[in-house]
Length: 401
Image (cartoon, rainbow, N blue to C red; front, side):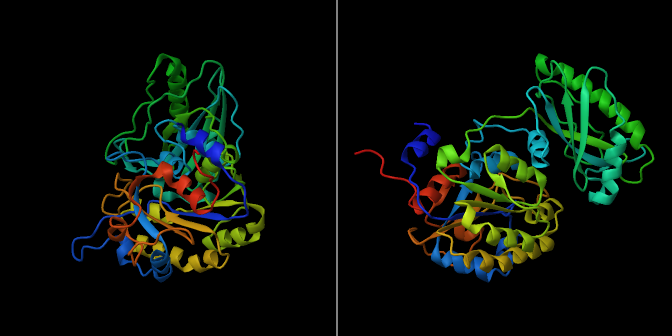
């Protein structure tokens, strides 16, 4: 039976509160000199105290050996099979900044990048230029005009921005132009099917004009395109889980994913402290809270082991503000692993912790990768995490007679 059909039939209403705290890219790999991961190196007394009370396991975002993007990783956490529901990054970014995609639109997540004199990418993120530098460049790109297509260019955050193409005959099955490497030139937008050939042509024309507009910029002298996508259709959270759900995130992409599954995005937090303020402020209004912390991922992508440790410790220090609200179910997890050693997402299972009065505590004493491999949840697919959350919140009735 379809998991959503089952949860729809078995759902029970009550006053329980569920918090899902997502440390983006939290999983890591051990460094050589002491054999410890970032989580195992960090001083995390609050997360470890939760580990003593809860049950732990290692969640598989998509399937064994498959490295997930942020979209599939979060969809799994939200209980949507990422192999069935595939959302392009462009749609996530556009929805995240509040852009209303229309049927037939194709949205593209773009990064400013730096090209060297040979035309090769020397920095895939243009030094993560700040908003006050990137927004004027986005404004310049609004000069681009492609005949027969309406083009929207909107800033997101730092080096990220969104381009939306609107017109007849567009489809989103186009290859990324980001080679995911430095020292090589950007790729060309190539259509994967006949229906997307016009989109690839439009993207090529956009890139040609953008290259001229950005020429001479010290850092952001070009751009790459990723995640060509139309607006997807997902069964909403309230229908499949019976939950009024809120998202508290800083980065637009994660707000976009939350909106696409029917969550309300509350507030405009810029810091972790402000996120905790929003959680407290809206506590009585919602049943489920998705709280997203980005910086464990970005430091991992930068290959900065020590900075990732510091970010984990920063998050740990905020945990008492969550536990003070006494959620009935608290989940601590990540959408994927981002080991600093690999400087990118990986396929490794993610340490996942569930705490409730109804869970069966295991013998784990700390929250980390090593403990998660011997925890009571074992290795499990992330798409079942929401079912576990509902069960521990007593929001599912008995199946069958």
